Amino acid sequence: MPDFSQLIQPDRGQAARTIHVIDAASYDAWLAASPPRHRAAAAAQKLAPTAYSSAILPGDAPEDWSVVTVAANAAKLSPWCLAKLAESLPEGSYRVTGAEPGQALYGWLTAQYRFDRYRKDDKGQGPRVLLSSDPARLDETVRLATAACKIRDWVNLGANDFGPGDVEAAGAEIAKAHGAEFSVVKGADIEKGYGMLWAVGKAAGKGREPRLVEIHWGNPAHPKVAIVGKGVCFDSGGLDIKPAAGMRLMKKDMGGAAHALALAELIMGARLPVRLHMLVPTVENSISGEATRPGDVMVSRKGVTVENSNTDAEGRLILGDALTKAAEESPELVIDFATLTGAARVALGTDLQALFANDDTLAADLLAAAETEADPMWRLPLYAPYEDQLKSDVADMVNAAEGPWGGALTAALFLKRFVPEGAQWAHLDIFCWNGSAKPGRPKGGEAAGLRAVWKMLKDRYAG
Image 1 (tube, rainbow, N blue to C red):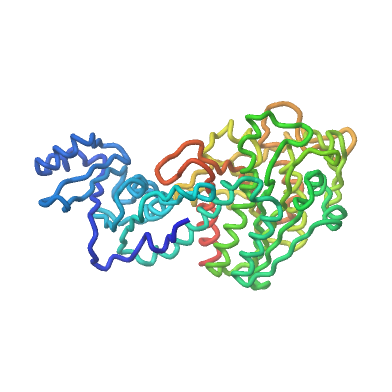
Image 2 (tube, rainbow, N blue to C red):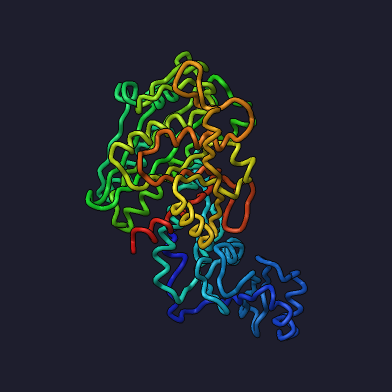
């Protein structure tokens, strides 16, 4: 990951090439008013009145060139409208005319992210620096882009390099950097006190045992906020084994944990006046003679008995025990992130994250933040009649409903059973992966919902 603080700088009048930003609606007027050499360059490079379209404009001397790019709305640039330029322009410094970069600073940074852990010979281009006359935005943008790209790094790592022990180490490093309290529960304490978490992770080999990673930070007198992230470092599906195609990307099944770690670091770095409790239950859902079987009954930390109707519905199990632990400290707000269901992707696709909430005000605040931050999510219902699908003949409930319908909803309803009484709760069923490259968003791991949740928290608690 590059040093993002060097890629966006305050504009103090230093030498820089110009990026002209024009509205798609004003494209024809701009073209008509341009000198013939610019019109010829635009035509040669197939500049068009569509977002991300850009061209190099010649100047009076060979080295005296500038850039023109088209945006849907030059008055308020989206995070991604300059990202394609950040990927393709030559090394150097640039300033925008016709607009203030604003949110586009974020895309400028994330466009220059490269995951090179396994490709040391792939150095890429030199840095492209964007100047801004809004210095107050720079530090926050650097912190947010750094958090998002840490998520990308963690998700992109092979499961052999990011198992439960590595999640623990990442949590310990973050806690130490911010003077937070760090703890981890594992071994016999997991087996005795977290029955669902133990059942999912007990088949993994030595050194990859299940554990609960926790961070506490902040003044205990401040509002209590719990952030929970699903940390399945690899998901084979267990004895209900996934097909090869379904298993291919399961290194990313710890994406919820990555979001919880990154969000915790944002909260602590900004010294948000909350009492933070971050919880990451982390496992590898493996297959061995110790693996939990379909039909086995687990005793959750809450005391609710759960019949395992599908070993590939493991994420909700580990989250249920973590939510119960969170409840023991009576938080006022609980947010969980999880790559939980394929059903959410069938419903909403890969770019739109599924939001469930037990409180309309919280849901409205998150949706408004998602709109502002161009970090899209869509609220799905906690439809109570579907709770009947979680009934068991032998236990208090099953972990997965029978049949193919409403899987994201029944998963959320399962989690709701373990949510702290009286707390506002939001559950984000996320994908956290780009299947193909887009400006500012390379193929691979991706932050999903992070910016929206962070804005909601700042609006609520930073005052």
